[in-house]
Image 1 (cartoon, helix red, strand yellow):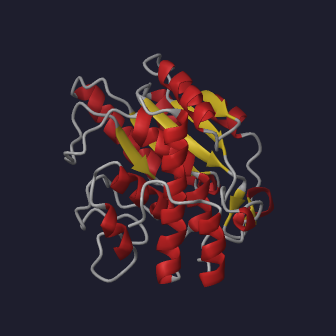
Image 2 (spheres, helix red, strand yellow):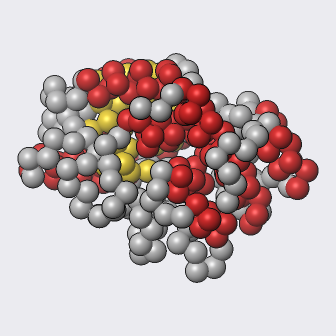
Length: 281
C-alpha cells in the first residue's frame, strides 16, 4: 500500500504531465483534469483491483469508465504511470496518428481505455451494462465510473440512474466530480441542479459525500466507505467535492481553464508550483 506521501508525489507528477501535455499542443482541458488528479491517483494506485495485462472483457478485475472524456490528460497520465503504456507516449497527446486523442477512443487500442467518451451523458449507461454483465458471469468485482457535475444536466444520466436502482445494480460506484463549474460558467449559472444528494437518494441510490475531494486521505476513506455499501441492493453515488484547476493557483476558483492551454510563461509558473517527483516524459 502506498504511503500518503507517495500518493501526493504521484499526484504532483500527474499535474506536471497535464499542464505539459496541453501546453505542447495548445489544446486540451486542464481544469477538470487537475481537479481530479488526486482521485485518479487513489483509484489506480490503491482502490481498484486491476491488471495492466489489459483485456477488454476485464474478467475478475475492477473496471473504470470515464464518462466526462474531455479530462483525458489526467486519465492518460495515471494510466501511463500505472504501467498500462510507456510514459514517453504522453508526448504524443492530441497529435496526428497518436493513440492519445483529445477524447479517449477505443479504435486506437490504447490499454486501459474501454469506451470512447466525450459525448457527455453516456458513461453511466455503459458502466451499468458492465456491472450487470459481471453479475451474470458470477464476477464479484466492482465497476467504477466518473462524471462531471455539468454532465448531469444530460437526461440520459437520470434514465440510467433510474434503471440502476430499479434493477438493483449494487456493484456500481459512480462518482460525480462536484466542482460546480463547467465550460460557460458555474453550474448554477448555466442550469441549477439543486441538491444532487437528494436527487440521487430520490432515485434510489446510496450516497457518499467526500467533502475534501483533493485530499488523498479523505478520498481513500470515502471510497472505502462507498465500497462497503456495495452488494446491498443499491447502486452507490460518490459526490466528490473538488476544485477545478487544483494545484495551479491561477487556474483555481474559475471556470476559465476548463478548456484552455497555458502559454509558455504560465506553464513555467505551473511547473514551479509542482516540482518533478517521478520524472518527466
